[in-house]
Length: 199
Image (cartoon, rainbow, N blue to C red; front, side, top):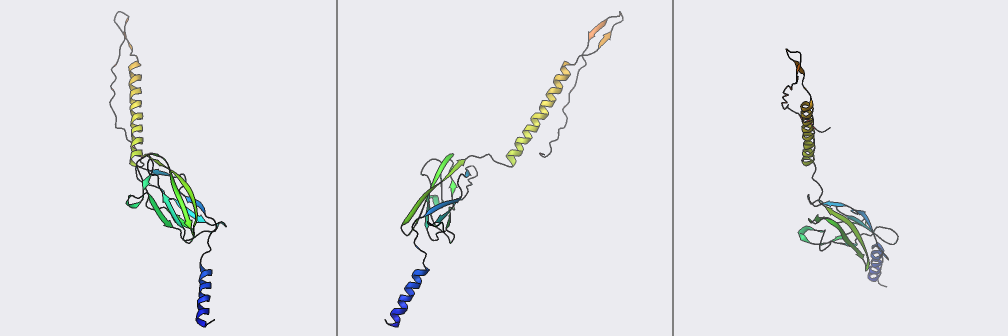
């Protein structure tokens, strides 16, 4: 064996040992995103994260992971309007489904996930829900303000009812009798209610 052939053989052995072993089986572990609720009003979604492992539960780097969205109903799109996204796993065997925007259809949806490497393939499903969640902040504050005003109005109405049922006093007459009950007009003037911040 010539020195050149020996060096080439040695290099091929070293390179072969440096490569990742071919997995016999793949497992897909859903790290984040299972059961998530996407707010279709704000077009906000949680990015699913999956981890691809081999038969020994070791992370598989460089695996191809395909995320496929439903073609109809509750769904969404990736950047550019696509329904499919392909991501390669990092050194920790993880792939992130980035760039997803939910559509305006409410309901449950299933995201199909397929991982493959060296001819070995595995599939999984991530279940999420598209929902029209109520806005927060100013809208919620307005609701509290309305409730306070209704309470103030109710108290004023109760005051009117009490005043209307209250009887007057009997006025004596020169002949010794009484003229009967008289009603003193009651005037209710609106005050200046103040509404402070919620406690």
